[in-house]
Figure 1: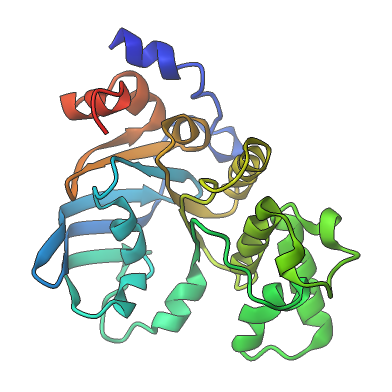
Figure 2: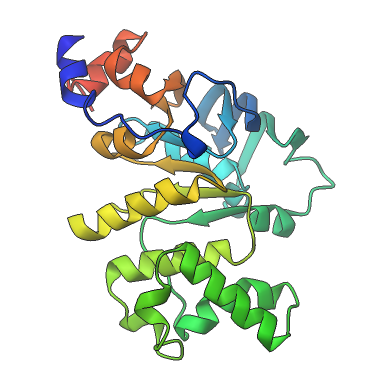
Length: 276
């Protein structure tokens, strides 16, 4: 265990939102209960039961193909668009099963926004990218739209860089700026949860640092679930960490415990680089 602790203990320093200690109980925001997920006949997730606390960052780690991105996409039913998928078990958002037949999937995805690995700005202006969600929801008032766009860009730490370029193409922004624009676009629908699938994997170190700082700031008001292959990043930005392997949840706990004193040997082997 000494090697694990020496590698990561210095990274796990950031407190939870509002300076709360990790040991204090936090209200569950999302809970999966005995979740199994299938692509056709192939089972991708096996009996996943876990709680994701509100206003904290939960990192999903594990080797490629372990099920962490599949699990992430179940949280806003993004997997629904893939033909032949099915699930058993439950996923609760504030106590309601998001797979109930009466759930409005469009409304769900406003509550549970998603930021993808590759930045995906629309071939529109910076303003129109951020205003897209509110407009789809029926908002036409120009002043309200402008207020939402400005507020979202400020929360995404991008406003100062683009405030004089609002009608320029979003495609002209740098990679890091485009990813923060996609975060602003997700924030514009006023979500409660942000899902991030390796949001910094394609970025340079400086842009990655800005995204990590942004995640730390956003957790004051949002529940964030992030998939990352970068264990140092998970240790830096997350409050809780879940380790997946071969479609199963091996271990979940507060990040310091996972990285310095994991309970399971498989977790220790992955953290110390013995496989993965």
